[in-house]
Length: 270
Length: 263
Figure (cartoon, rainbow over the protein chains, first blue to last red):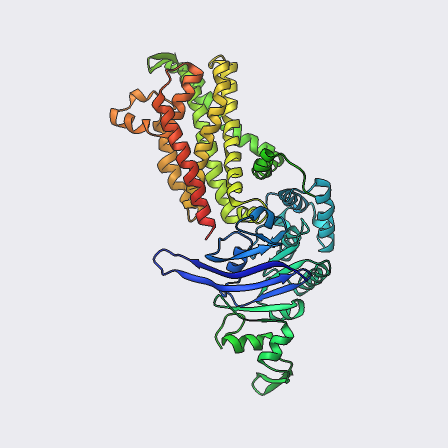
């Protein structure tokens, strides 16, 4: 497998009026291979979105570099982004268009033929269960549908690298599973996916490898199983979930995270 | 599959793509677009040109005597450029940047943020030009403007609309909330509209105000439009002021918006 996305020693600092400069990402390095789902796991404020904004070329890094299919995203942004699909954390759907027109409009940004765009858009909408909404305005879609549409739009150009920043936040369990299945299918087609999430179950279930990001640094990077084995072990955990009520369970990534950072994934202190 | 383009097309294709996005929205809401683009200048024309024009008769400015209707027709050309350019760019781009977040969405594709902002400005300028062209066309039909002058004025109108769109984009980039756009609206746009010679010759103002107004971009644009359409004497300093503001605002608006979006 070759790396479709390479992040090399990425650092990003912000200067803020009246405050000392703040380093949000501190020398992060990782790569995502073709056909791999790579998880960036961390609580809010860990630096996930800043890392993603740098690797999509939107923020210039303070130092380090990002290569997409071998193209430096800052030096050759057009060539790099031709291979990139992005679903950002915030809702960036274009509310001036209906569902299908939105997909078509974004397809033109990748210089695809209209016929090809319509075909691809219909396939994606159909797979994600949005086909019957293709003529609906965005404002008529539920939160879950909007999120799925944003993922579909990120895939319109059939990118080699897909970046998803917390794509399942706010989704109901069924919609989440549809999206998980969809990502798994895309992995089989050789797509390299970077998935930022603070859902432990999602990361453990989908990701081939995971980087645990905390305060701008990668604390460890490995397969979910290896991370658990390395930091927690394989012994069953007997946890008191309510006073006097014990629950035996397997160790998980949340335990790894707690051990490494002293904080829970939702951002609270231990 | 990427289509093949010439190097020049390659350079402008992304900006054209963004421009077409705006045009598509305009086309889909064509009735609303037509009302907001064309009705306002027509109302001003009828009210001031025909209504007030009948009462006032002729006016003299820069040594040229014209009917008040001719004078105001040229004023409304500039005013429609100011309003269309500024308001579309200020409120429109604030919504697209802050609420819709589509600047960022478009810049996540092979189109760069710089190209997105050029597309935005060129679309806003297109709307301003359409509005101005309506007034120029009507002025030509009524015999108030010279046909050739009106035709030559079109590129100038486009540049004027680009200037005021840049002003709007700059204000949008500086505003924390959409309500804050009222400040430049009341403190910059309306004073320009009232004191740059749209409805009366600048010579009627006290000298200090005249001098102050002569440095404003609307005064310069108006002077150039009246030179072309009504044979007013060409004022080179107006061209200088116009180019100064155009270059400055084009640079500063795109730079400020980029700084706001890119951390």
